[in-house]
Length: 61
Image (tube, rainbow, N blue to C red; front, side):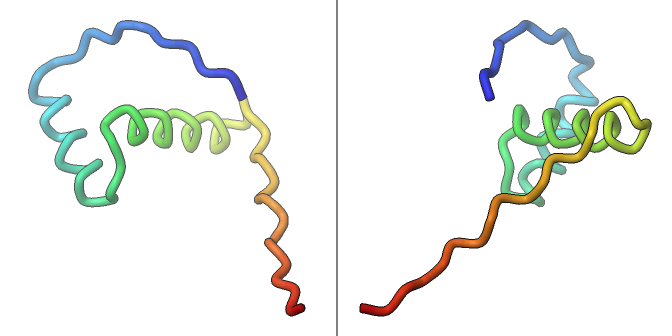
């Protein structure tokens, strides 16, 4: 999946709250924003959920 960069102007209090939330979930602020947007899009029916990746099979030699 290709990603595009764009500037986001955001209130400093919202950014601080996002930073705290991202830290709690071991994500970057960018990752947290992307997670929240994707979740909102899926819940609103505007984006189809992606199938989870197939499990990695462990073969013993």
